[in-house]
Length: 338
Image 1 (cartoon, rainbow, N blue to C red):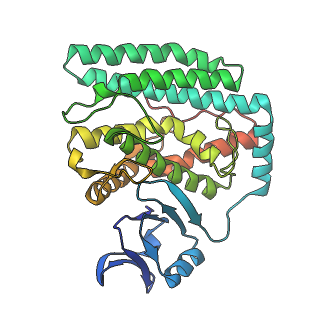
Image 2: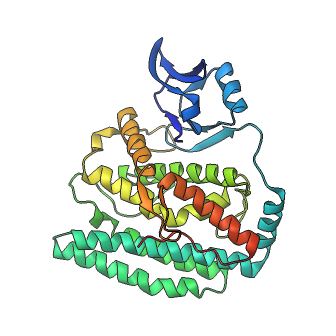
Image 3: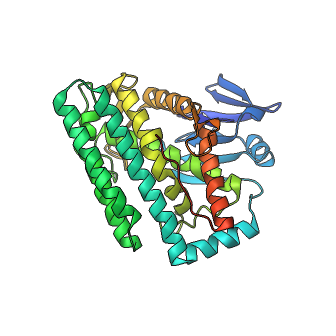
């Protein structure tokens, strides 16, 4: 089941006869059966009535609060899901230097593999020799980094390999944008200085919360990671597990929205007083959320299991495969596209 995103500023979420109703200025904007919703995500100035909140908690439907820019504010959830024995084994695996490093190496290796795959796909599609050459060269450099990730002996050296891989990838990201009007010089997060960076950050935020929901569903502790070490209030395990999915789910979606002109520069607005100087306006945010849901609903054949599933299910399967590796002591093999 998909989440319900409410991003219209000034809207209110209510509940009537087991249906969730989004209203603004005494007008009903949308209504959906609560049974069809897995999660509610409220962005910015959106309120929720006490009866609706009580109903959602009773039904086990979590409510996530984000700023209008997509930054995390907090979450409300009913009775926590959890598996004590599984979490004890997770704590043991995280505390074991060799076991923890093995999971971290697998995640970085899968991320580099998927970055390389995306670059090679675009290199094959382009008819511009210069663009194709730049993308192919970057893909070859990522190939050289994969054995280094597989052989890293410390978490610090692994982070160094990952950082070099990201630098190589984003150095040619502008070549993936095929329509004029967009500027991208480098990946910058705090704060994103341009629409492309703002869109990437927004997409990564959505992916993180989707993965965090999957982690809670399976019963692992989202705050104990392997690649991202534990820090206060940081869902380190969710951040770990999204790494291989960033290029496949977010980067490719951002490029689709830009190259197909689903989003235009005028869908962004300047926000000089806020922490994000550039952000999506209401129309642009609605369009991107619609495309994001479409991407999560896209079906694929899982490269490791051979099963047909959508990407939303794929994220949960990734967490379950990690849980199985933690319980059995087997190596964890993250999601890699072919």
